[in-house]
Each structure stands twice: as structure tokens, then as C-alpha cells.
Amino acid sequence: MDYRGKRVLIVGMARSGVAAAKLLCARGAVVTVNDSKQEAELTDSLAGLEGLPVNKQIGRPAAELLAGQDVLVISPGIPVDTPFVKAAAERGLYVTGELEVASQLSRGTLVAVTGTNGKTTTVSLLGEIFRNAGKRTHVVGNIGYPFSLAAAEAKDEDVIVCEVSSFQMETADTFHPKVALLTNLTEDHLNRHGTMEVYGAMKMRMFARQTPSDYAVFNADDPGLKGLSGQVKSKVLTFSRIREVRQGAFVREGKVILRLEGQERVICGTGEIFIPGPHNLENALGAVCCAAAMGVPSPVIRHSLRTFRGVEHRIERVRTLEGVTYYNDSKGTNVDSTLKAVDTMTAPTVIILGGYDKHTSFDPLSQRIAQRKEIIREAVLIGDTAGQIEESLRKAGFRGIHHAGSMGEAVAVSRNLAAEGWNVLLSPACASFDMFRDYEERGRIFKEIVNAL
Image (cartoon, rainbow, N blue to C red):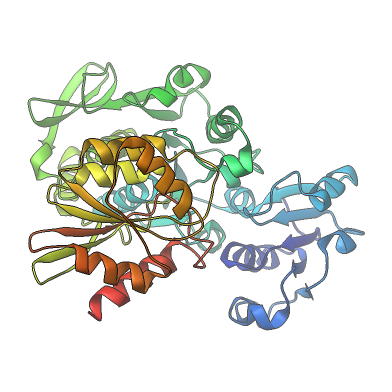
């Protein structure tokens, strides 16, 4: 789409909104920026707009600014059924989001990853693989680096690896990845989407513009994805750590096998993959499929799997003190993600749980914790959901329950509970917005507290 001369209202001045303003100004749009917060609360964000010809309308209701606009760009945090967004559509404005705008204006080949869990690790691993293959690579999207920043400088020969959220897909109509991966689908964000059917439909929008020359990659082991591969027009690859697949990646006798067009290649042994846990084996298998679809040679994929060190805030070892090892899994923002962290633990563990309520059930996690009570010995509960989690744990028969009013107190309680040879694991199974700006701040504060012990 050509935005030259278009009058564009951007609502939400977080990282993606500021990046969209920069990109659209560079492409000749007449940009107005807006946020419901006051200017004093946005000092750091608005500093990124210095020198740009933008009309700042900060602290005003967005509904007052729709007149005369051609395009409305909304933050992923703003639902499409918000009254001012619906009013914009009724006025005939083109309503979209930063990710969609960036994809329209970017050059390069787009590889996209969505799913409930595993997105950040998978896109980071793919970034490593493509860079090792000699490609100029941009890792963007929901990972925290806006697509618009990369779109401003990407060239035709570049690779864009994009982490995609269901929120971003609400405003995506032309988004068209050459390769698209759906990692899994479990209960999450029902406070936004309402039902699993709507949540799943948002994830599947990522494949809507693909053609038979593109690739769609699905996790064959995830029951939530059953039947979804039949809905796409692209070439389908699947991956599995428990059975062989017809086209894609799987495990046989401890080795990662890639099967394409009837030909098999051994990529590496599962024990050679540096990042631990069965969930990371799944992430690696998905990445193998995407990299192979992009023509990356097997030796490059093998080297990358052997050397990739993982991502911050995802089962990240912080330190060992007095024989106790502390792990930061602040990226565990939903039940399924924390289930995977629980399954990765092999020593007695104190787990820190709780946070912002996303209206999902904690029962599957509580049942797993109760089943693994020889490993998960104690639980320290924080945040808005502490009461819900306690009720769920008690219903599952787990009794090692403690409460804390802050992260500092949670670490102190955990330290007192843990003995030599134990782990302390922060994996909240919840979003962070009740106590922190985001999961990254939560993880950083946890690490600061642990490192200061």
C-alpha cells in the first residue's frame, strides 16, 4: 500500500507505535500520534519522535481525532471492538496495525512464527540459523523489536524473521510470509478473544495470504492443531518428537531427521541440541523445517542447533548460591509454558507462581505439579491470581503452598525453603501486568534480587 500523502492517526506510543510513526513519516504519510497517557508519562517513548514532522495529540481521547484521517494504526493492546476503532471503521478509515503496515512496506523474505508458546525461542534460533547461513537477518515483531524498524532498512536479499501474536493478527489482512510456523495452540488470552475458536482463528490468519509456492509448518504432536493444516493453500511441513512424519522433521533413534520430497537427511543427535527440555526439542524441529524450506544447508542447521544458547527469561539459569540454582522463566506467561518449565526440572524445586489474571484455568498445571511432587516440592504464590492458584493446587492435593507480597519476598521465602541441590524457578504461568510493566521487567527484577543475595 502507498501511504504517501495519507493522513494517518497512530494510537499507542509504545515501541511499535513510535516505530510505525518513523516508518510512515519516511514513506510520506501525514502522521498524527496519540496516547491516552499524559506526555510526562511518555517522555522516553516520545523522545524517539524528535525531529519528525508529527502532530502530537497526547492525553486526548482518540475518538476526538478521527475526523479528516484516512488511516488508523492501533497498538496490539487495543482490541478491534474498542468503540473508537469501530467508529473509525464506520467512518471509512482503513484500520490496521503496526505489523501489517511494516509488512506492506518492507522488502526481504518474510518468515513468521506464531503459537501459544515457543515463539520467542524459535524466532531467535531461526535468526541464528539464517545469520550463520550468511543472510542479513532481522528478528522482529512480538519479540520486542518492532517490524517497522527493520522495514525501514531491509533489502530484497534480507530475511525477516517475525514473531507474531494473536493480538497483531486482529488487524492483519495482507500479511504474507513465505514460510509460516504454528508452534502449538493452548488456552491463553481468553480475556481478549473470549473463546478458543476465536483465538485459534486469529493464529490461522497468518496463513491466509499464502499461496501454493509458500510453506506452512505445523506441530504434529499438538492436539490443538488437529485438522488445521488442511485449511491452508501452501505446502505443508510437520514436525514431531514422538513419531515419523511424511514431510518435515522428526526424531528417530535419538537423531533429528529431515524428510523432504522423499529424501532423508540426518541433522544431528537430539543430545547435541544445546537448549534443554522436550519443549525446546519441538522448537528445534520447527526451526529445522523453516530453515530447510528456505534452502539452508544441513551443516549450517546442525552447527546452529549445537551452539544456540537460548533466550533471556526462558528457563534462564541465573546463578547457583549455597548449592541452590535459580532459574528465570518470566517468559512463562501462561499455563502451558509453565508446564514445560516444570517438566524440564530434574532436581527438587521451589516454584514461584502468580500474576495478572488472563481468565484461564490453572488446573492442568496444578495436576502436573501434584504428579511431580517429588520434584516440585514447594510453591510460592504472588500477584492477583495467588488465591486462584492456591485453590487449584489444593484441589489437586498439593499442600506445599506459601504466599509473598512482592518479588523480593518471594525470593526470600524460596531461599529459606530450598536446600542444597535444589532449584528455585520463577515461572509464573501468568502475565505480569498486575505488578510489572511486562515479563521482561519481571525477569530483570528477579535476576537483580537473586544476584544481590
